[in-house]
Image (cartoon, rainbow, N blue to C red; front, side, top):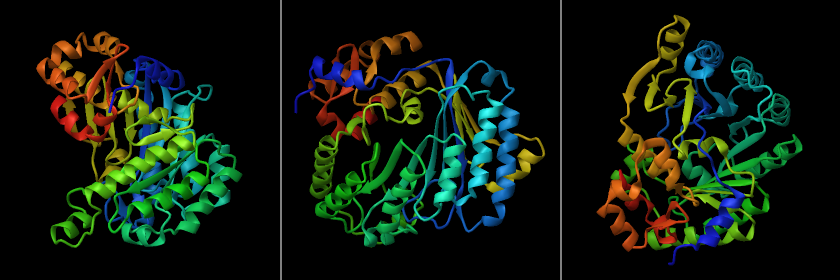
Length: 401
């Protein structure tokens, strides 16, 4: 495959050019609850812990209030707020609203153009709850559909069916959400290319503004991992998965959803700003157990135990269990790797400005080899993956770590 021309790159950038902003940051709230753990999930979450909901919300409200006066926060402006999990929508809608309003109030961003996203799963929130979120300022909804095939959903351990997933989109639109994202997964056990086409066609017919489509990854210490070790997981062969990927590009292009990141597609203007900040290796602050924060090369991770988290916050103690100070070169490499996930790549001038390092000089023969193999191209002052590079992204990234 040939690399995109400079004209194509500029045309793509015209619709979406993420910009690193040193004086801004994103906020993330990790809600570690779900109705049922899915077989593939490796994120920190607990099922059937409803008795902890109220105490958790109070602890996070307190954590937000404690963080807001810090000099770190006062020197920057929040641009995004994202509630993920777990399944945030298992909380009562009024609890989600209180978390959103606390962030807006404490960080003084009521007048900011703040992107506020809440992840919801079908069958976990009703129309009244969706309306309450919208009135509170939530302006972007991410619905965890994963599949529209009932057998596949059952295999994944999801608690909803295809009809409930479709209904959630209808209700979200009726509640006034004009920025709507659907999460889908492919490469599922027993899934065929035809089955993936059926799910994707149905999803596109729902007219989402954004699609996130991830190939199933078998993570360690998950039920799927244990099944795979026993030879009990019937995953599609590589050729079948490649056919799914090819159809994803075809279907999204026809639907007017452009690929702006390896796994993400959007209508122009509906790209996820919060995740784009991650891909640009920008600053972000996380609240809740297991949440990660990163600012100026200092990365911290909160304890992954909701009971311990609540006790520590209530007693005014630190919830940080891991802390790492990244060197300039580590931050540079991370920024290159994350930036290459985006279709428009990463600007060399931005790398030089932030780190005083040029990728050609820094990587030398490693980068030259990837360019010679037509996996990476330096185009219009931007370092990018080629179409072939996108297919082999994991291999490319491993050479640039």
